[in-house]
Image 1: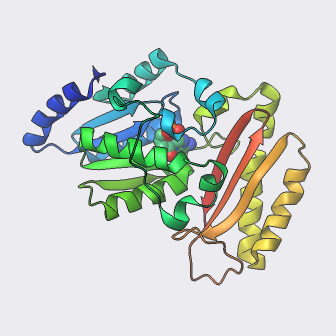
Image 2: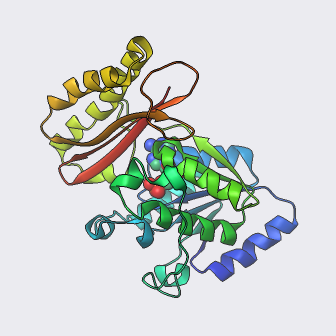
Length: 283
Ligand code: AMP
């Protein structure tokens, strides 16, 4: 695996592949890699000639400095996992290369109307602006044929889809299904921060989503579906629920009645101890 830490060098390297007509698949990550990330790498490998992964803990998308400071960065372990998965190129930039003007002196900001005002956008002000900035930069540097994103961050996927469509980025994007532990907990780099007892409680978030999904499909009523899921969540005082919502999967507008005409997204965010987790199901 080729490793680059400077954008000028990786650009130069990938130029040759592009000229040779190779398909380049790109998987942007913040590291602390797990099976979810690796499934994105696998998909890229299956569909492209060359797979590029980036690891960059992007400071502009963290609204909570403590969360940024505590973000796990097991670089050696990540490199080993990527080599094992057959990743071809790793881009490991540092903050000064990605933001030479500093992160407090940025003029550009991108907003997404309704899409970044709700759910994660409401609870993490500025988060999606930071995501849009870094994804734009990375797509310009790597210039891939296809970029891969996980369903676990569904709102992020939707926002990046709009970014690419409306700003005419010359790239396709694909969404990859959420990978879970056998007990249902979605893999997340933040799971590493859970204590043993918190880890046993964490799969309840997925169970709550399943209850909401069943009820949404049978009662056809979002208040009822959320209330039934809440009965389970309330049994666990360790779970500090931020939101449990049923929204239109295209617009993220709240859905009240299930009239089967629209795809719904049932999504949850909660803190367990100091760790904030998110998950969702598409119905
Ligand atoms: P992150 O390192 O958290 O920024 O995630 C990098 C990419 O991996 C994003 O597109 C995520 O949506 C995706 N991802 C994270 N967790 C999972 C998972 N459990 N299953 C599938 N994709 C995931």
